[in-house]
Every structure is written in C-alpha cells, then in structure tokens.
Length: 82
Image (tube, rainbow, N blue to C red; front, side, top):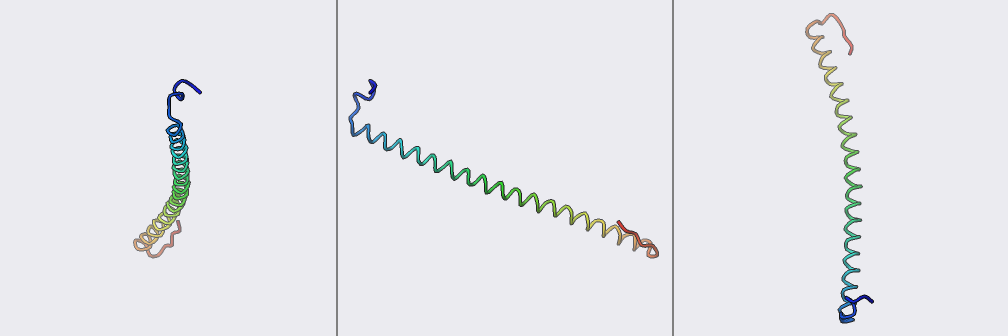
C-alpha cells in the first residue's frame, strides 16, 4: 500500500475500484460501438462509390446516345457510332 491508500476507508477504496472498473467497461463498450460504426460507414462509402461509378458510366452512355441522335437529326443520311 502506498501512503495515499493507507488513510482511505476500505469501503470507499472498494467503491472507487468498482466505479473505476465500470468506467473502463463503459469506455471499452463505447470504443467498440465507435469501431462498429466506422466499419458500417466504410461499407456505406464503398457502396456509394460503386453507385457513383455506375452513375458516371450510365451518364457517359446517355451523352453518347444523345450525340448520335443529334447527328442523326442534323444529317439523317449518315449513321454515326460513338
């Protein structure tokens, strides 16, 4: 025992230990919940990134089709492919 703990009532010391243990447990659970949330957000980022990539591919195809239609309107005798 060190000098600080000599003068503390044993009941108080045990209560402090219990409270400290509970505090460490709450902190551990909080950190685990944050880690779980991080993993979930990373998964969502991956899904959004994939959706965005698909969106850009579709948009590119639509622009190409629109360009073809415009050329067909301007010059109906020729067929142009992107």
